[in-house]
Image (tube, rainbow over the protein chains, first blue to last red):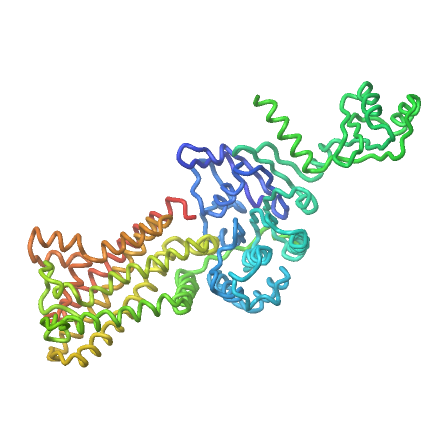
Length: 303
Length: 271
């Protein structure tokens, strides 16, 4: 069963089209990485799934039911932008209010459980307004986890966090997928973090879905390359460039050969031309690079 | 844990849904200083009106204490401040209170948490209307206490037909439901514009549209079909029919505004 099934979804704000004929399928149990640049329509799509925005066209089904069905939406935990908490109330009170809205029977035990999941056990009595950004994001996730949601929608939960906050958040997200068994739709700019947990991806640009793929498909699509280090980078690049169609130097100063060449072949070729290879290995481009490549490709086409 | 591939969906009854939402809204009401500030304001205003009227050698605004609660007869046309200064003022301040209360839902982002629960749009309207009506009814009580206390202090006459006074007070308290629903509706329409919400609530709460209509058509009982008209109708010469009229008008308008508010929320972007 698909947790989310969207067909030809559109949303306009005045004359501006935020989401344009978007189709999307999130299988139940997936951790779906929703990727796109700022203003690409990620948050708008997520808000429509939650029933906060009204689409101008298309259809949306959650677990086979229409998205407007409040019973389905009650099984959707949401963290969109920032958590909707009352700043002068304590973390505990805010969670209690949401538990009451959800009609949770053993709310105290459940709140203790979600606070533990997000590593916030000691902060229950803090006023929400006094919490740091990282804490607020985790409180938002705790709120979204109340009622054991089948579908969790997290909009940029890692944004603005420092390295430690990001690490904690990653651990929290891994724990959630392990312990709650929820389908997770997560949008993020931090693709390196997303790559560690996502099982499916959807890439959106200017309100349109560019492509959807599983992590395996992504791995297959991500080009492999041979990375190497030599004493004379410029000469190496020139030599390799004359033989292979795509040769680049990466940020760390390594030279990458993208054509499907064998390492031995490259080493021999360079050796015959007077260059000794000090280190060589085979690797794959990361999600972030794949995404940038894809964006450049589309940009080139649209020019 | 196994993934929730085919989750179970529950359909809680209206009672269960409302129980949760009302609980939350009442909790919020009792835990916000704003509520107590408005209760205090409601108590202070009649005291100020009664005591300030006789200052600087001027004639007191009222000779009878209970005129601070309601006029002797229904006066839709306002000729002086004395015709206007009664318990109906609670509905003006009540409008501001409702705007602040509901505006906070949107500014804090609480609505986006709320509408991802079982909550239906009509539940939201009902819950806000009931809780705000309760708050306004409480303001009526503190207004009564403040007015009575000031009456004793100023030595104004306390002579009144107790039955009519009680009917006038209950009538105005009953009208709170209609007014609260109206303000909830206005706040739903102007949910993105907090300032306009407050201004529109204040403007309508003053009863200017009905006072204007009365100036044109005179003191007609047809004006009792409207919230302000019925609120004025609950006066010191009221009888049980007046209370019945107040109840009917308040409930009918509450239903109308709840239906309209639900339709607005259902057909527009919530957040």
